[in-house]
Image (tube, rainbow, N blue to C red; front, side, top):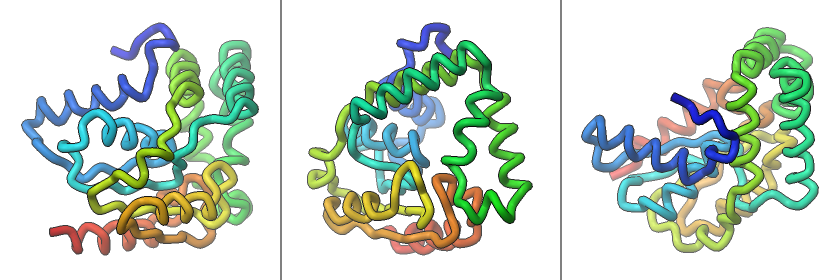
Length: 207
C-alpha cells in the first residue's frame, strides 16, 4: 500500500522497494532502466546497492539536484494538485512532457499521457513531487560508475535537455549516448521503435 504521507516518498524508499521486489523474485542482479524519475532511482540504487545492478539505462533524466527555482516549482505544483486535483497537474505537465511534434501530430499519445496522469491519486503525485524536490545531487557519483550505461535523450526534451544528458554520459566512464529525434521527455512513448532499437543494441552487447 502506498504511504499516506507525502514525506514518506523518497528516492531511498523507491530504491529499497525495488531491491525488495528483486529479493522476492530471487533476482541477484538486474539491468535497470529508468525514465525521468526512474533515472534518479537508479542513481540511488548505485549509491546504496551497486552490486545489484548489472547495467543501467538512463532515459530522459539528469544527475543534478533541483535548483531553488525548481523546488519552488515542485511546491507550487503540489499545492495545485491538492487544490485542484490530478487533471490540473496533467494540464500543466503535458505540454512540457511531450515534443512539439508529438503534440501537433500524435493526439493519441497526448491523450494517453493526459489520462495516465489524471488516474494518479493526489497523495502519490504530491509524494513524488516531494521525492523529486529532495533528491540528492548525483553528479559526484558519475565518475565512479563502473558498469555499462546507456543514456537516451529526446532532442526536444524541455525537462532533461539533450545537451545536459550528453554531458552526463560523457562524465560516466564508457557510457553510450543516443539521441532520439522528434522526442520530448517521454521518448519511449513518442518514438518507441527508435528507443527499443537503442535498448536492444545495448543489451545485445552486454557480456
